[in-house]
Length: 229
Image 1 (cartoon, one colour):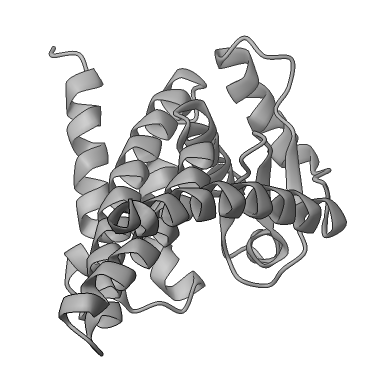
Image 2 (tube, rainbow, N blue to C red):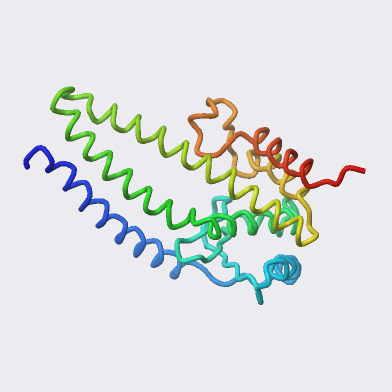
């Protein structure tokens, strides 16, 4: 029985972390967000809503500076104040920002938002169990090995989700008559907008796919959807 103790403790820890993370995330978003009211973006989200047979798509502004979008586990869509400010300054078009909204909707529709919360909790639990087990045979370096393994696993899962959300957004934008072009043009801006230089690191170490690979995936979809004349 004792040899299974780390596993049982890890399971209990995962359940506790999931509940706590969900509660903390909801509380943070509730306290620091307001519903977005922008006429140009509303016209675009209304077109996407019509394509999905929805009355409307609600988008919220999350009051933080980093440029990002967020799909909450409860299904709400958020754009950060920093991202919205880029749009107000003319650095990002309304169509490009709508592609972010479509991408985050993909995370919700495909179940990524809740799964990420579960994965995060489960990965923390598995990391704890691995550290406890590895430290018995690799004292002093068990934590390093466990952290490295879990970081690689998390990055791989995240990249897979991003490709799926990109494809969902491309289909939605195409159906809404907005097209995939804003999605691709935004990808080319993202590194400068987020002040990121991800090209210096191997793609498999990144939580998001490389820009060139994301654009290539979108162009492959476009080629499949374009009728042959």
